[in-house]
Image (cartoon, rainbow, N blue to C red; front, side):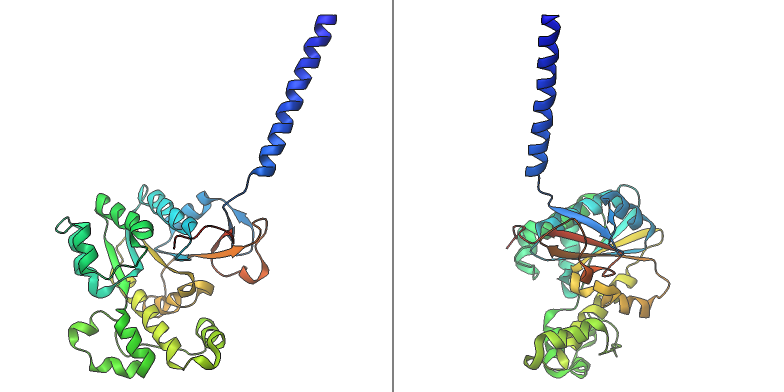
Length: 292
């Protein structure tokens, strides 16, 4: 009996130790992100993948300096590509650099030559090169969707009318003109409010030139029975606005899934202002380390 008492005492002690250890580990565990649907219900990454597989276009609205965004963009792309044909596209590469991008994807030029011939973002190597290299390895089309920034700058200074002076080749890198525009779209109104007296009515028009051009090149490069995955700053697709508005203008019947990114001090629940911001909302800790 004495032996059994010692055995049960030791056994109970081990159980208590394991429970205490699990409690400490759980207390120390800190999640990097949480996904929610548009109603604010927690969802799994797998559910986002399933929704993406049913879509024709997926917008991944990112924060450009957020490492969780870039990691999940790559993981989502891999998961969808494993089950369905895809086309990729990004705000971060401008339409007049498509030739250089194609030459890199086909192996005609090296990364160093791409660096010197295309206007790549400063964080390209850490944040976007993995996506481009995935496309290269899998022979997936990657579309440079954004308007060349010099033309967006022209619109900012002189309005849409300034684009009329461009050559036919230059116009081929922009959405067809005249570009539809609604100054009362929520995103453009918010931009005017945020900038206050330091802006002009042309600022949201410059944004619209980007949104319209990205939508145009998405539609132009759609392929049957495939998913076009597009990477862009959240502001360009939040609230089913921006690029989405132009996409509906060009091809209203498309099945679209949007992902937005927000940062919060806690990940337990989606804060009220982010409800209905997108089909899925990626919430990351506001203290997350930045890539630049």
